[in-house]
Image 1 (cartoon, one colour):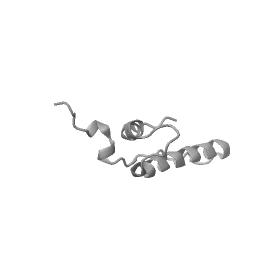
Image 2 (cartoon, rainbow, N blue to C red):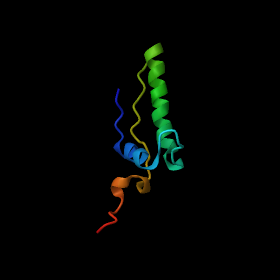
Image 3 (tube, helix red, strand yellow):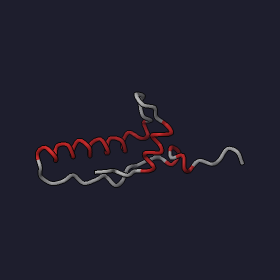
Image 4 (cartoon, rainbow, N blue to C red):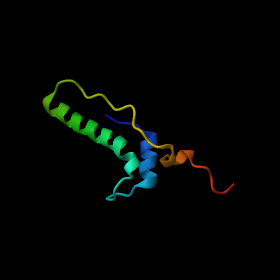
Length: 73
């Protein structure tokens, strides 16, 4: 399965580096994604009901750079 979360992806790309801590404002969204991945792994091993894909991944507007104003107007 593929999880599409453009605002979260943009925020992580812009505000986080590999191997570094993510911004605290993104913890909840990243935790939801990681929980879903963990549930998928368990589901594939044990079966049962397929985990529901997260739909609300909160990203503060200030961290979603698509909302940033251009600095060179």
